[in-house]
Image 1: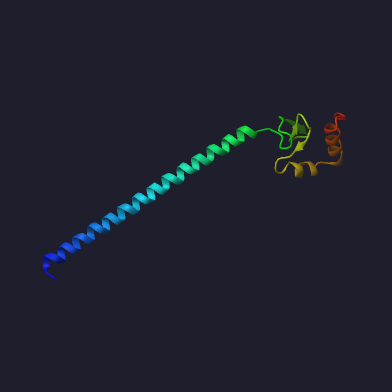
Image 2 (image 1 turned 180 degrees about the vertical axis):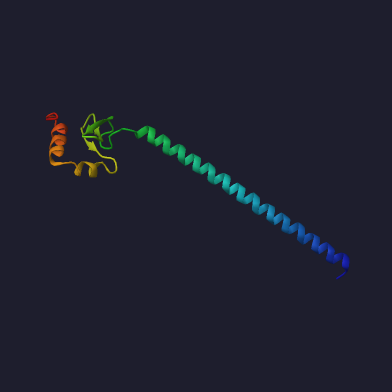
Length: 114
C-alpha cells in the first residue's frame, strides 16, 4: 500500500467518523424534539380533559359545589348529592373532635350546624 493510498484511507476514515458523529447528533436532536412535542401534546390533552371534567360528578356528570365541613373543603354533587373527598380530606375529618364530627354529619344531612 502506497503512501498516497494510506493517506486517502485515513482521510476517508476521518470523514466517515465525522459523518457518523453528525448523524448521531442529528438523531439525538430529532428524538429530543419528538419527545418534547409528545410531552407538550400530553400536557395539552391532560389540560383539555381537566377542563372537560373539572368539578363534574364522576357518578352522574352534573356540576359539583364545594361544601365547607368544619374547615375541610369537600365536593358535593348538585344533582345526586354524592360526596367526594380529595386526598387527605377524610383523614382531616376523622381527626376532628367528636362534637365536630357530629356537627359535620348534621350539616351534611341538612339539619344545620347545631
